[in-house]
Length: 260
Image 1 (cartoon, rainbow, N blue to C red):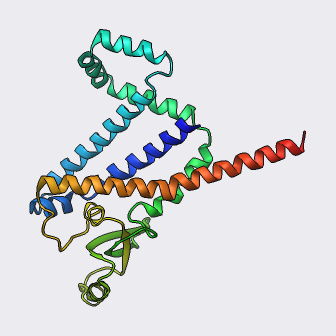
Image 2 (tube, rainbow, N blue to C red):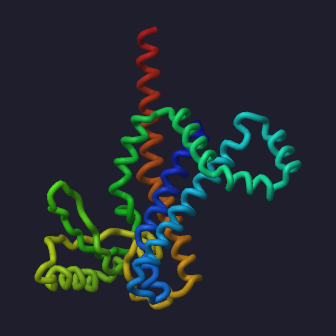
Image 3 (cartoon, rainbow, N blue to C red):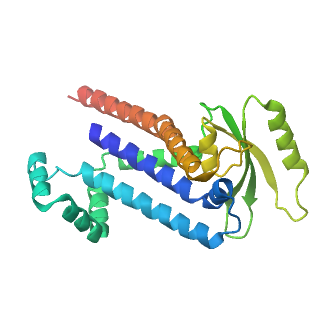
């Protein structure tokens, strides 16, 4: 059970992290490297991030499944004989077949498919930010899609500001509400809580802090964004998921004992 829960936690966290990273490459190039209007580069960058995400997930689950069919000691002996380089080449050559096999194993070993899907959809509203644990507020415009055969919302992140700067937050919200374009669609101005300002920057928000420039700052923000998204995944997916599993087993055991 422990292995099952950890794999589900890691899978949801990695999907959340890499998807959020890939969707905001345009703002990253602007924020960290002052590179604007690079639509083609942003597209290629996003594809590279998605590829890195697939590679990470595939490698992680390959390691997790490393000793399922054979004892761990035998696997290690085989690895020593063929060598790590050869094993790595085999992994890259058979990448897609290994990925397919890993997903097949996870689907076959899924213990609570209905519950897992329900909690994935429950977790989607908390894809960004943290409404409970936060030190900063990201201000954004939310546009409603009203075109035919379409529905939903589009977000346009603005600035992320420390939550104690209430006057600045109120002023920016008022400024966005009052200064809209003539042909601008209907929108609402909202705010979203963040634990780390770096996580908000990775999610596409601008910042007044000028020190976030260059590769080192980019890696720092990615690292802290990963920590925040892991915390969010634990809070809004993992803990409720475990609680409902315990409730499910408790009710099942109670009913089983009653009908004995």
